[in-house]
Length: 78
Image (cartoon, rainbow, N blue to C red; front, side):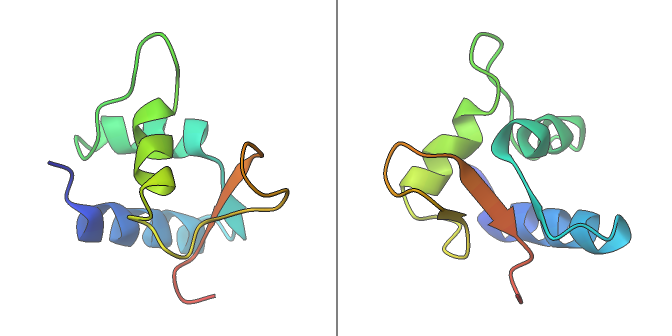
């Protein structure tokens, strides 16, 4: 089971360190895999993280166009 708190903290730290407003699931999942926080899919990059997003595990993430649109993950305090 993924450690959601560790994932959110890592992404928040990454966004702050790199002065980014948000990150997309494919890039985020790649970084999370390197940190051994969430394995990525070999055939569908970013899918494990998108599955968490769809399940509402990262509540501050959003889709601008509603269901079936692109996900954006901002800092959890913004």
